[in-house]
Amino acid sequence: MSVEIFYDDDADLSIIQGRKVAVIGYGSQGHAHALSLRDSGVDVRIGLPEGSKSRAKAEEEGLRVLTPAEASKEADLIMILAPDTKQRFIYTEDVEPNLSDGDAVFFGHGFNIRYGLINPPANVDIAMVAPKGPGHLVRRQFVDGKGVPCLIAVEQDASGNAQALALSYAAAIGGARAGVIKTTFKEETETDLFGEQAVLCGGASALVQTGFEVLTEAGYAPEIAYFEVLHELKLIVDLMYEGGIARMRYSISDTAEYGDLTRGPRVITPEVKENMRKILGEIQDGTFAREWVAEDEAGRPNFQKLQEAGEHHPIEETGRKLRGLMSWVDRPITETA
Ligand SMILES: NC(=O)C1=CN([C@@H]2O[C@H](COP(=O)(O)OP(=O)(O)OC[C@H]3O[C@@H](n4cnc5c(N)ncnc54)[C@H](OP(=O)(O)O)[C@@H]3O)[C@@H](O)[C@H]2O)C=CC1
Ligand SMILES: CC[C@](O)(C(C)=O)C(=O)O
Ligand SMILES: [Mg+2]
Ligand SMILES: [Mg+2]
Image (cartoon, rainbow, N blue to C red; front, top):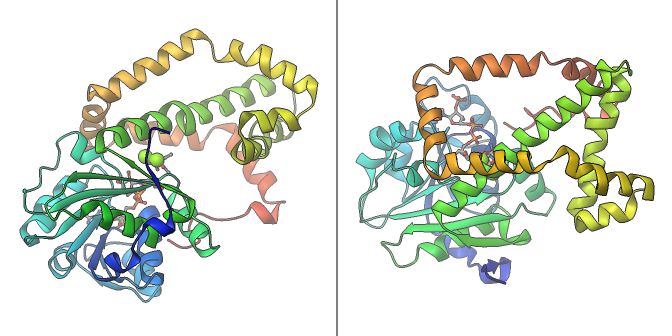
């Protein structure tokens, strides 16, 4: 195996238990890290601006909430879990002026370091603990005694101990129960962006919406189309998660398997693969990062337009109606943060 994978036995939890941690941001990842660090015996404070709507949620959990500058000053490990497009401003205004020799600045994703938006001084550790899953599941798995795998990376090892520190942090949020893989900021950033754009979020959403459109435009009931292309997708992906594509193919009918083997490549054609390569190229050469930063600076006009179109896609209305009848899938994403 070419990668190094670490588990709980490889991690020394006492390292992170001996640090003062500031978690900047209390959203999807921030709440999961902060609550699980606290439950692992770590001294945690939250950094949020005075007017932040996340403040009440963190305070409800009994966490101590300071401004990002105060939290950075008090802490010797600052984990930045604010939106990627805001991090460079938070870093310059609140974090950097409060850094001392031997402090550590951590990230949950490598975007700002990989694309040179944050350039830290040489006297601090720069590392990453990036869970490979949405924050709400990171927390839910931790509470259930499980964990979401994490990537760790060290960009700058001023202390000579940055990797052990990152591994200790990953263990404290449950990552080492599932496996912690050592990588680089470059590899994490590029593969994470590719995964979410081409397969997990962009690819999967477009596949589901297009399948729904084809069925409903051909006159089939939206409810049947919804179950077929969205609801059942989870059940199929659960089998892949448990035992790979082979396990899924073992469980489906041979009719489905023959259709899978012969029709799948007609949907995901060589042209689609070429499009995926172009998307990867735009990530690697910085085109996507520049576009996203510019879009954010312009007030996100295109993002908002596309978001609205997605929210009004007919599959959402059908889904809301059907999920309303299935109490067990009614898990609002506001469950903990
Ligand atoms: N979402 C995920 O599951 C994953 C995210 N990541 C990475 O984690 C990081 C955080 O993403 P995510 O959890 O999705 O973010 P969210 O958008 O869910 O949450 C962002 C949080 O940052 C707060 N915030 C906004 N502006 C500031 C500021 N100026 N100072 C301090 N806090 C601020 C927000 O507060 P308010 O309520 O006021 O807006 C909110 O609490 C990103 O680097 C992302 O790429 C990595 C893996 C998975
Ligand atoms: C798949 C999306 C993700 O990369 C994640 C949950 O890991 C993100 O940035 O939210
Ligand atoms: Mg990811
Ligand atoms: Mg991501």
